[in-house]
Amino acid sequence: MRLLTHNMLSSNIKGVTNGFPLRIEVEKVVEKQVDFNPNFLKNMFSKIDYKALLEASRIMGYAELPDHADPSSLESDDFLRRFHHALLQLHLEEGSLVCPETGRKFPVNKGIPNMLLHEDEV
Amino acid sequence: MKLKQLEGLLGSLEQFSNPKIELEQYPTGSHIASRMLYTAENSFGDVKNKVVADFGCGCGTLGLAAALLGADHVIGLDIDAQSLEIACENADELELDMEFVQCDIKNLTWKGQIIDTVVMNPPFGTRRKGADMDFLSVALKVASEAVYSLHKTTTRDHVRRAALRDCNASSAEVLCELRYDVPQLYKFHKKKEVDIAVDLWRFVPKKKQ
Ligand SMILES: C[S@@+](CC[C@H](N)C(=O)[O-])C[C@H]1O[C@@H](n2cnc3c(N)ncnc32)[C@H](O)[C@@H]1O
Image (cartoon, rainbow over all chains, first blue to last red; front, side):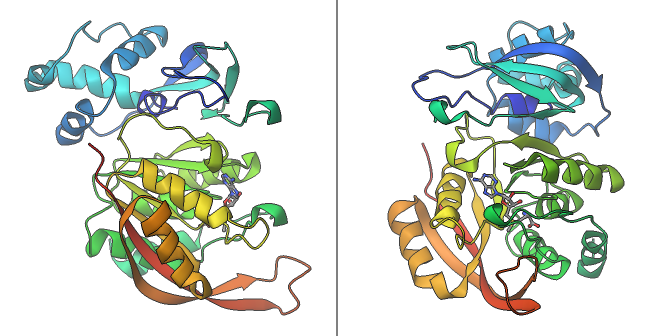
């Protein structure tokens, strides 16, 4: 699971009002090379939640994203490359996503998060 | 990529080894799948450099077609772990990046407006009534540009009405009518192949502020 995907997922358990962002528990991270595409990154920057990405990337062991970023950061090639790495190249291969309100864990196996709910959570 | 080439690659994918009746697991054939995505890209520009979600991705055919046509990020969602495993292998086989999430589309809550286009071949709702409309309503919430979907031609009026009235669509257009050979996977099908008419739809969601 890429952190771009993490940036879209939220806990959907019945009664939870703010299920975003899911806290990450890491067992295994892998990195996969992806083509660098500045236009795509610029477009994504305006759509994602930067703070959630920043925290997630740190938990995944990547500390190179700056604390703050705004649209002017996109002019820097250096920033774009870090953003690219954090958003698209880091993968949570094994671990869990934890609901911020209830602590319920959604397992991630072989890179696939399991967001299925139990009957009493729907 | 040429249409023929796309169809050829999709034709080489593994499909459900053990289809589950209650989930309506039958694959979209490479003929239909390739035309669906090819139209989405060449007539509407909804695939290349976009973020695409494949709802009920099964073994990944539609999402992988989107990746082959240059989508930048593709996510496949399915309730069934076994299908997702096959989809993963298919992605590896084609050396494509595709993300997968196991979830029930009905219960999906999605953050933000990251997804541009949803492509899907939803369960037609023959096993669980309304399954196709559940998919459509979530798809129209999630997509910011367009939703491509297949529905039985016999339900055309119903689909249009429900999309425009209940599901937040600003437009609903049938792009073409196709013959869909649903193979005789299931015992309750008497004939060897059931050839049904399906519509390829394009829905546009209302703009969200
Ligand atoms: C008709 S098949 C299409 C498969 C694949 N998209 C294709 O085109 O070959 C429908 C798919 O939806 C999945 N499905 C059924 N109900 C679902 C649900 N509630 N949530 C998510 N996936 C579901 C099934 O597992 C199956 O893979």
